[in-house]
Image 1 (tube, rainbow, N blue to C red):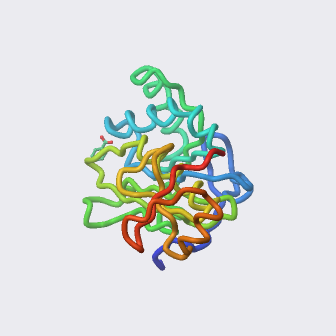
Image 2 (cartoon, rainbow, N blue to C red):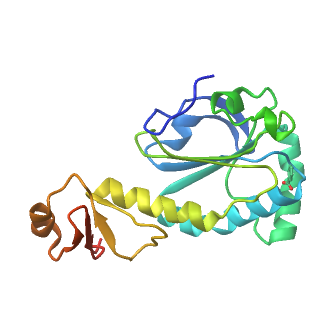
Amino acid sequence: MPAIHLGDEAPNFTADTTDGTIDFHEWKGDRWAVLFSHPADFTPVCTTELGRTAGLKAEFDKRGVKVIALSVDPVEDHHGWAPDIAEVTGNALNFPIIADPDKKVSQLYDMIHPGEGDTSTVRSVFVISPDNKVKLTLTYPKSVGRNFDEILRVVDALQLTERMPVATPADWTSGEKLIVSPAMSTDDARSRFGAVEEVKPYLRWIEQPAG
Ligand code: BEZ
């Protein structure tokens, strides 16, 4: 299967989920989406990850992001596991989990990495924009749980850099200083943003504009 690159259209699919059968693009509509895979149901790290994601619903909603998970387990297992997630983490599932026992979606998105032990999915993340373009990919091994604050942080950065000609520095979080896009002249940046601190001709800082 061809690799999925940033800027590619996120491949569409139909799949069985805990919320019924979906057409992915229809389900997503013109919203941002996070599609993420986990290796298997009834496993410890995955239980913490799905509970954490459910607990962040208000944060995803605030950013207009729909969330959907996936594993190669059947939908009956997803339903059977859901009460454990609620019990252990205190967060009931509030997003669909794709059941992909025939590995159709996992293969489409290259979520199975044979060197990682077996034919279950690794911990892949795809952030997809309203126009269905892949904006970010992350791949974690099965043994390492993801940092969901980082996923929210990167959504903030993606949404901001789509709206204005800026880039975000190392370890940036929302509200901190931004870098003027290298494609913009300092004069144009001053006209658009006001004060620009030029540390180097290629490194120009601005305060994060309101809104
Ligand atoms: C887990 O979710 O705990 C897990 C799943 C597969 C391999 C290692 C850990």
